[in-house]
Length: 202
Length: 252
Image 1: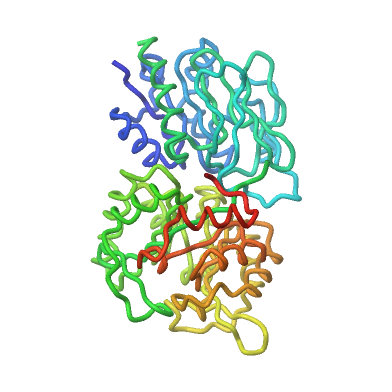
Image 2: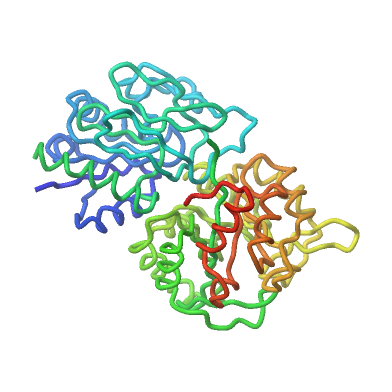
């Protein structure tokens, strides 16, 4: 059984994420308890809002260790938007705030010749042999992004004022800068493929 | 590659039904919001905007329920506006399934509302809805309370001020063109797109794909359409096809 636990990061649009899973036939639960995060077949860290606020929520609920371990062990984990940025060591948005540091890099604001935030649909080019992604259009809502693919991760790329990292995969971990829950039928297929990995590990 | 230009159907909601009027008046029934939203999503809509135009508290309660019902079927972004007065109002709508929150009259009365929403939920969540009326001297002023009150506030200045406070997108409606099918106010679109660095959604007056194309060329990142879809004169698919033929990048 694939129980999916959504970690409420305080500001995220949990309702949209939960609705997307319900359309796939799964009723997700919400939890900030580290034992439940450890045990769940699949964990989703959605994210909208500021890096500092989301990281504060992770730390105040003492989830830093549980989330870091899950991701490092490659267990089914989906992190979305600011959730993906939390994997990094830091963000230009919130100087001095430590991210999870799973990725040893810093997210930076888009170059100013583009309209910021990036709001809308953009092309995603998946990595070779992607387990989760196909080429297609995804919905983005972000002002900050990761520029370089980190070592050890397969990276999808998208162009907006230059190329940036629009998704990362490693084992059963999928990090999306875009919102799969808002990316129509294409996004539903991404969620479906990720959900399939939660069954394998349960 | 580049970001696709968006085509966004707008549903004005009153007491749980879609309504449409001319210059915000003479509202007539245009269907069930869930059916309309699902239809437009299937046609290729890039987002849906729901504007609650209910006049009563009961109507507002219905709006939350409408958002929940629409969210259940909608797998594209949903912006909800109308009567949002506080960050807690925004939280309720987000909890029901909205992704972005439109603020209008209350933000004009109390601009700090924009900061409160942007700080709590992020700039990408804070949409400034502006209703703009031509002043007769070449400019535009902000009108509020569904067009009943002219404020004398310059539209461009208000948009700049609001983005400085954290608004991440401008939903720019020409009060003069709303529901008229005379085409978007292109001078207004160009003026505001040039005044801010956030995306601008052009609204008010669309009658055909040519109008959409003009607004996107004038600087809009997205175009709002309502009457022509509700009346069944065209579909989102037809509009996007015409935009593609006009050289605009849209999500297929």
